[in-house]
Image 1 (cartoon, helix red, strand yellow):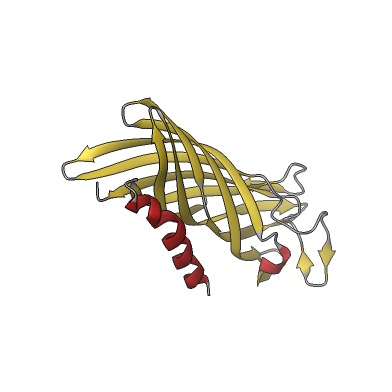
Image 2 (cartoon, rainbow, N blue to C red):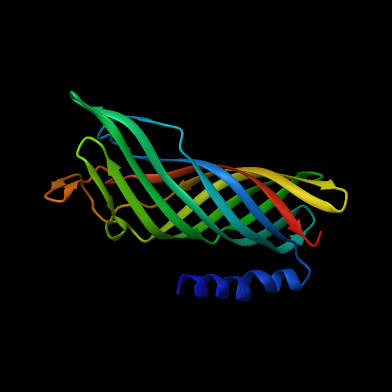
Length: 213
């Protein structure tokens, strides 16, 4: 079912822009993500947490220094902590898998160097949770909000390598919605909910290959 949805999105949205003459690119990157909670329920140190990001991107508009593009991306977001609650020390990990459709509005600063605003609706496909203090390890997809909206700002540089064109870039992304359906912290018979009111953040570095360039 998911494969059919992905194929339909590519055929109906991304490929037509390419066939009309726009750029089509493949993007592969690594991100570091974390979950931000304003009230700080636990004293947590967020560890480096690299995850893979893979996507397609197509130009839909370009005039003068301004342009826009639309894409499809798979990426993970979450956090891995070493934390303590009183005398208890342990590790906590939450990892989301997202399918998103980034829309980017860009401005060319100088030749081949662009800055852009990223607006990225995202569907949460799967979420896993692990807590070594409480010995919890489970899938918590049903407790999460299935939809999120990321807003970010990025920078991209495109350069020529003979017959091919590549790009390198970076993006800082902020999830605007809570990841959880629940509104307050609690402990149930099934375990604790540390993730209430958390919101996703992401720093992404990627490389880009332009097809047909």
